[in-house]
Image (cartoon, rainbow, N blue to C red):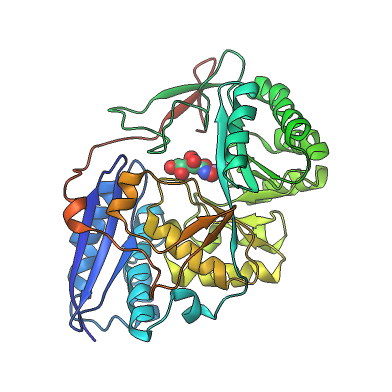
Length: 402
Ligand SMILES: O=NC(=O)[C@@H](O)[C@H](O)[C@H](O)CO
Ligand SMILES: [Co+2]
């Protein structure tokens, strides 16, 4: 089999997505996600100008060789742009191989380790009351695990609580929106959200929370201790994790489970966190981790240390990435949970998919490959529109983590 064409498709059905479609001489094609929220065209250009010319004519079955060719052959290794580009090619190749084998991708990875995938969605509000009410709406939809976020007194639109529709955390702003943050107000206020959720909905639902890189290790330790009475499923991105050793301090003080990794793009970003069991869930996701090939390796490495998968699946990972994550989740013996923030109808029309959601679980479906495709004609109707993620400042103007 030979690769005859590789198309890089940029589309914006409510938010920007970058996709790769690899076409072969045997009539099979595969698709991959290359979306890097806020830097989409950097990846699209990396692909069209530097990657595509080197792959035409190659055998698409040689997935590992192509992965190594793109990773080692670039010389300049790692980083979000490079790894998203490699991820899109890799995911499309696994899609082709599973289609050629006549089976769903999870079968090719080793078969199903479970019947269904526990997923979590988002509930948010500008106040605790609003967040508790919106939590109830997701609970009624059947979600058994829900991430809860709230605004702060005087700061209604901190991360995860803004006027975000399902389209995009950043919305389609011309310039990055500037948000304001206070760690002390947050640390004083957030335990009240989880006290209210447990009081209102009891213990038979999993509570998750995302601190979105904003704390120091000692602040994260304090929050973890304060949240212990509410038995969270996980506290995510408590600290910006470049300093992996910093998680030793958090671990010393709290039994609240920790999840990290959505911004990681190589196992080296998580090697110490996993091997020292400083985290409980690794959040790396197919589009940012370099594709299915490394995601399998990361899952196996994590399994050695009793760390489970918890792939990132917000609405700015395209449905292609979510589909690949679902197939990886069906296979992975150490599957933990999958983020499923949901997509708009408009987006799902551009990306036909085989998965289905039912009573809090996701089922990848039995379509051959990863079960997601792209409708190129429809995609062409939504031209790219520059958009950014917000930036975040402390009350005194200090540029902070968003
Ligand atoms: O856990 N989920 C998240 O943190 C997401 O909402 C991220 O802010 C966005 O995907 C960034 O583009
Ligand atoms: Co997150």
